[in-house]
Each structure stands twice: as C-alpha cells, then as structure tokens.
Image (tube, rainbow, N blue to C red; front, top):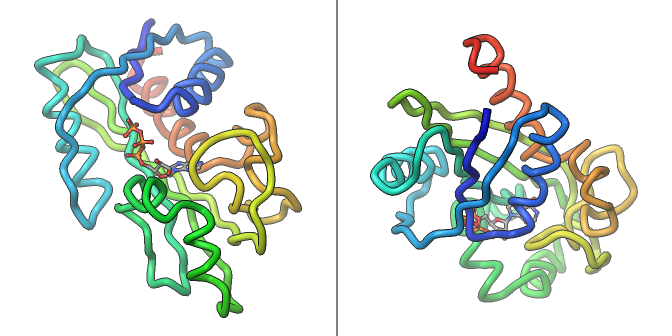
Length: 186
Ligand code: ITT
C-alpha cells in the first residue's frame, strides 16, 4: 500500500516516512499549495483540509494539523501555532513564559485520512514542559523548547527515531495504523 503525505513541512514528512517504513508502508511526499482555514479547533481545520484535497490528491492520503497548547497561557498558541512560530518564534514564547511557574504544555496532532471516499481523524497528545532556554538543533518549530514528560532533553536534542518514540505525531499515527489494520487496509 502507498499513502500520500500532504504537508509543506519536510521535517513532518521525514518523521512520517520513518513511522510508515516501520509498518512497511510506502509513502509519497505531496507538497502543494492549498487553502488552510483558520479555526479555534484543529479538528475542524483537518476536516476542512481533507475535503479541499480530495479533488487534488489521489487517495489514500493523510494530512495533519497540530499545535502546542501551553497551560499557563490558556492554550496559546494552539491552533495558531504555525503563525506564532513564524512571527514571535521560540524566543517570543520564552519571553511570554518568563514569570510563569507552571510550564506544563501539550503537543496535539490530528491526522486526517482520506480513504475509499471517506474522511477519518486520529488524535495524539504528548504532555511535557516548556524549557527555560532554547536547546538543540534537530527538528522544527517548537522542538527546541519542548521537553516531553519523563525525559530530560528537548525534542530538538533528539534524533528522529527518539522523537518518534515520544511525539504526538507518533501517537496519532498509532491510532491511524490500528484503524488501517482493523479495516483490512493493511
Ligand atoms: P503543514 O500544515 O503544511 O503540514 P505546518 O508546519 O504549517 O505544515 P501545522 O499547520 O500543523 O504544520 O502547524 C503546526 C505548527 O505547530 C508547526 O508549524 C510548528 O510550529 C508546530 N509543531 C507541530 N508539531 C510540531 C513538532 O513535532 N515539533 C515542533 N513544532 C511542532
């Protein structure tokens, strides 16, 4: 089976490529321009994108909407993670967190799957904390400031294999694989 992975983000694709490889599923990176809506709910964003893509991308395909939700900032940047990352970046987030004692946060990923003319969503959540300083050079986005629960380094200090053992993406992916197996697609 081959699954198309729709994303502009090469790092995201590389993480999926490895996850799918371990399940012996072939992948193809689809990097195309399409309209992404803004909404307070990342599940709505994923569903909307799935529907837009159905006339453009051959099935089966997945896309993902994800975000970082910081407790003491009432869930900010959440659905606006991509925009906030491009504008104030990790330094901006650390600044907003300067006087915060509670540094709990969650990464949430929603994978949208289109197969046999139907849409499906799969969720993954990884709890962690916002680090006190930026560290690590791997990965993308908020990786240099996110330490997953039970670990002592940021995602950006991990190789892809190690990040894939803890990430929200991997957890949503596991739910996706379970669905594909249960429904005899795999
Ligand atoms: P596509 O929409 O094209 O897939 P994107 O990077 O814009 O790529 P999102 O719209 O899902 O992805 O935005 C999620 C943002 O949240 C992303 O740009 C990062 O800033 C952040 N993010 C999500 N997952 C992350 C991860 O595993 N590590 C670090 N930052 C992450």
